[in-house]
Length: 552
Image (tube, rainbow, N blue to C red; front, side, top):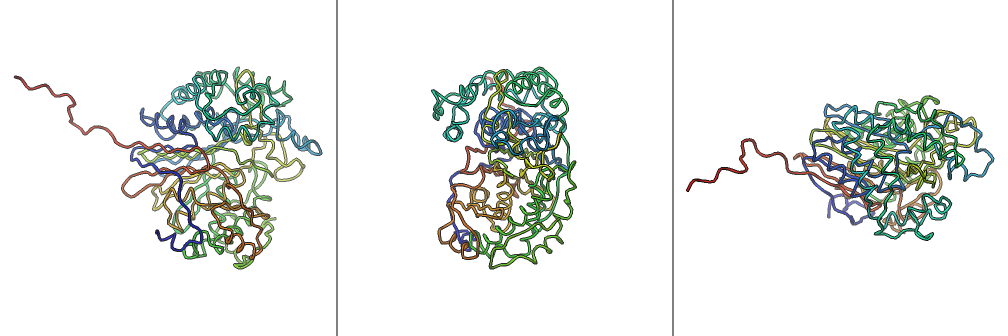
């Protein structure tokens, strides 16, 4: 029994195994994508080359989660300790209006071409390669082209995602042709081929992101969207920009924590919650005890109260980042926390985000880290496929408030607010851990708990990513099945509203660094994730592989 288990109110068994390597580590939510990233490392690329290759592979083999017509964040750490956040989040089309969905069928905001926002993924991936990589777009996109043209085997997880959305997928003949067979979800083991997507990837290999944002691929996409009732034009695609941002930084028990800034809520509110709980002895309280879970739930409620009014696109809303992540603000809010009873939290300052995203965590032996979260928002995005390009566009417009005049209201050119939380942790200036996951509004709650699992509870990396989670934003407290009925009853007695759930958020991918130079990679049971490690190294200097045979 480990020390954390001796104090725990909840124990569990891990379902997957970690990987260890000294030369590189790639952790994604699909084995083929992890292999694509590892191939780049093996061929002399660095962590950013591997990350972009893995993400592009995921656009093919995790088509329900991510695509070139989506958005996301790349959090990159360099060997010198600097951090770079490349914001490729989607934006409202130039022809969008605050009232465009108000009082109308809410499905128009979540399903079909009108729900599509202007993508930024490709711009971020290309910028990452140019700023930090060694390889070209043509180099890193090759595995994705092969997967799209030759196909990949559908997993049980993909089958379940298709089944969950089949009623909507049937409404679009092009996407149904790929993922449904006679109207039924394709079974696990089916070979999935998308030659139109392969051609689009080949265009990006030749032209880079300009293929979509300035070239024929973008023209084709805008025409196909218009035919389906969309409003994105070639002007929208040409105006799209990647924004380089400074990571937000804080500390938790002496460990530095770096995360993405607004329009992401992830970095800011993880730091806010860690600051709030730093004053409590979480280790002594124990993992999964009612007392610890009560503190986590109250911290989440506090953070979501502030997120609702304060966190949005900083080009449109003045986000008080310094205040939100300050230790003083945490002390101010802590004064209202009742250790015995749940309470309602209003903002201390005067939406429905989808859980379907993907995440990759990559590191190389030189000290470079890429921690990236990208998505098309809902499962299969807008639930349509563009016939000429094979692209599945996002439905990011669903994240905006259909009511005008609010922080999250629709405005032309406004960036999506997201809960993405790709975190990189340092101890004494050196990499300690990097982690992230999909899960929409549940993302930063999950990274927050994983940080506590590592630092407070001393869990192994595999335990930290697989441990049971909870989530709330002020109403019911969602609790995974790893928590007992007795624990839920204890929280209910404190005034919470616990609800048992099969899972909270998605598959976490993480890397931890050990003192002996080894990197440990772990994926959790909530997705098809697989860590791929590279060990070994170059030959010892002076070795002759084939010495001359001795003379007779």
